[in-house]
Image (tube, rainbow, N blue to C red; front, side, top):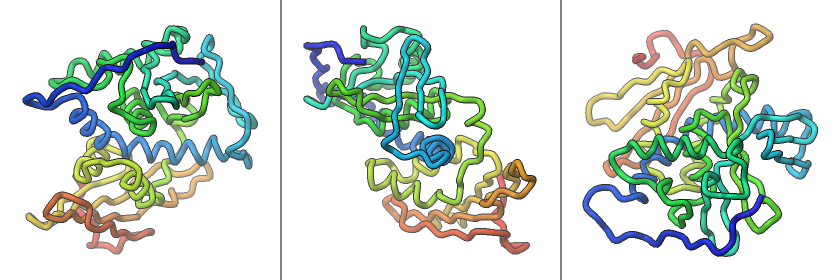
Length: 274
């Protein structure tokens, strides 16, 4: 894999009325981040750290077969979303990279075509851009193409690639909801997301077994409860079953606190489900 040479990124546009590409991208990242990162936590457990696998073990991508190999685990169907050039920080979408076969880039092309229907432009209209980073590209790509995870890796040619992983067996595995507060903290540390859109994006994704409720009017509180999560292969309840999370926002719409409990919630203390 490599980037074509002598490409010139699209310059930033002057401020215009309405949402520009960067503003629209900010919304998409904020809405996609939490459901994508929870899927990513599952991928970390089930693939990247499976069978004692270490981070330094070999990986390999075959663009002709669109297969991503993780040494010690196996092959996974994967598409290339794009590459970030280390030299100048430019992002190249896979659909504009002539060194890649179209069989490996159709997910990126579909994402471009889907976002073209939005009322505002996005960086997907630019083959090469400086508007985005590797992590936010991975998050938006993974969630909005219905991939099960993303994988970020150096290509060895002065670039970092983002792969979108899709695998039916991986999709059947549990989401580790007990890591929800850590996932949120990680997102807030790494990305300048809108805090309210972060939680609302997760809510709109309609996660299985998660029920949401608003707090009293004007309280700035949203509560989520895990109830009815799929049981494990051994027939036991999911470890997060019965957990609750309480998100409180300040007057500026920022997350002021995240509280929660793990285990069965006492009768009568459940938040109202949707």
